Length: 311
Image 1 (cartoon, rainbow, N blue to C red):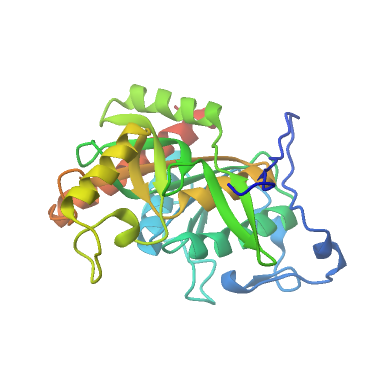
Image 2: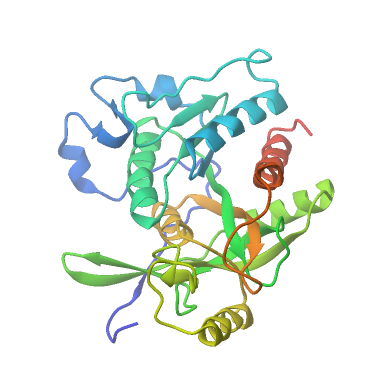
């Protein structure tokens, strides 16, 4: 961190009702707010009527995975009719997909920091315009494990950058701003307790390294460009493991940073698809990968049911 640069303070509140607020005074001057990438707007949609009851937001990279999750959680909560189809609320755009069942909102965020950051900006404004309160947001996704067998689930303690520091670097007006990437400890503990109750798959706490790309940024040897040796790769991943990193993905840092600034409880729950200490390519059969990808959904679904008193 450069001299004089400080990690931005987080916003926390312990009141019973915690309304979502966004720290942007310029929004108050706008008569209408167009959430362009959602194809939604305050002038064309009644946000409180559509989303005012939302208490849980689950986000993940793939639109199909998030539709599968909303179908799963609706059945678990007894919302809607058996076999009911849930339409994409963002059908007016192909950038993101959004589904709702009762108090649960399920949204795809695409791949990488820029894509999820855009989605989160518009999501937090949506929750604010909808007058939502006491909302929890959880990223459910896939990752590469470090020192873990494929299919293990990692509940993130803190997101770290490629140098293993718990910070997210954002350039604002050409200047670097460093933001904290700690996640809500109480929420993480609650999720681990749910994992123990389920006792269906290995679940661990660990730091999650968030990188800027899938290949060189994650020390892979199988990209189109590679300027390091296999030994150097092994040394780097071993150093990551020794620093407490248990998985690698590409969204957690900005997710944690933005949750902190908004003052919303957030968690990251990802399944590992391979052990990066043993290789780079994912060769597991698709049916097995499909089962692995359901594990974060099962864990988070169990937690939501407990929160609603349905377990």
